[in-house]
Structure formats: C-alpha cells, structure tokens
Amino acid sequence: MPKATDYPGARIPVIKSGVLAEFLAVPLSMAKEQTDRTTLDLFANERRPGRPKTNPLSRDEQLRINKRNQLRRDRVRGLRRVELKINSEAVDILNALAEQKNISRSELIEQILLAQLAEQEN
Image (cartoon, rainbow, N blue to C red; front, side, top):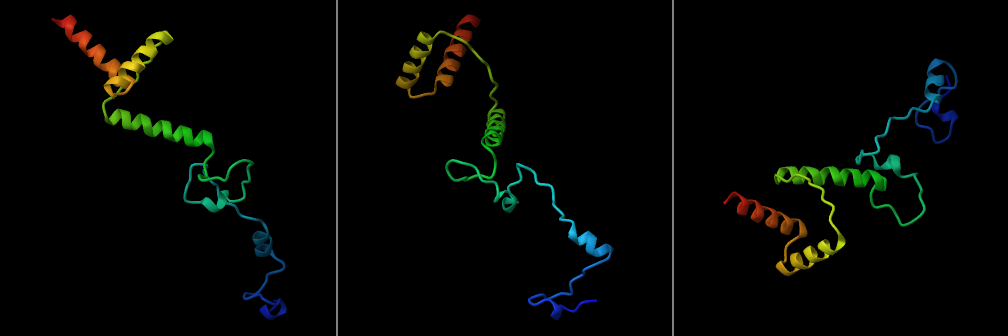
C-alpha cells in the first residue's frame, strides 16, 4: 500500500485499486430540494443573468410560497376568498371611496355588503 509520503500534501494513504477505490471514485451527490434553504452551497453554482440573487429559490417558487403563506394568514383571520367581476367605473368609485375612508377596497366592499344584508333582515 502506498504511503502518505508518496503523495506530497496528502495526509491519508491514497487507495489506487480495489473495490474501495472504485467506490470512492464515483462522485456521491445528495438530493437537493429546491425549497431547502439550509443547503445554500448546493445552489451557489447556478448562474443566471440579471440582478444578483437574494434568495436561492426561483421566482415561481417564491411566489408559490408567498401565496401559500398569504392563504394561511387569511385563514387564521377568518377570511374567505370571493371573486367578483364588475365594470371599471364601479371599481374607480370603490377605490376613491375606500381611499377617502382610509380603508382597503376589500374592507369597503365587506362593509357595504354587511350593511345591505342587515337592512334586508329588518
């Protein structure tokens, strides 16, 4: 078996042949999860054009995670999603009124709906 002194700078004996040498010659890689933030070194070699990366995740993955977090926050606050299509003129009026009352458009629509429902109950 070769000695460490046979290879300058080596601190351990180098194995040149045999089953162990063949095993060690095969590069082992661990699986990397795109959303795994603890293995930033695995993403260091990914070069992309544009501004420097501040997050190891792709923009699509960031958006997906942000959306999931927003839905969780909404659920905790007891909110449910309702989609509504109205003409742009009504949206402009709602925006102006919401700004005047210093509340969000969503809060304004909720107030209007609750007031209308309360009126119908009476």
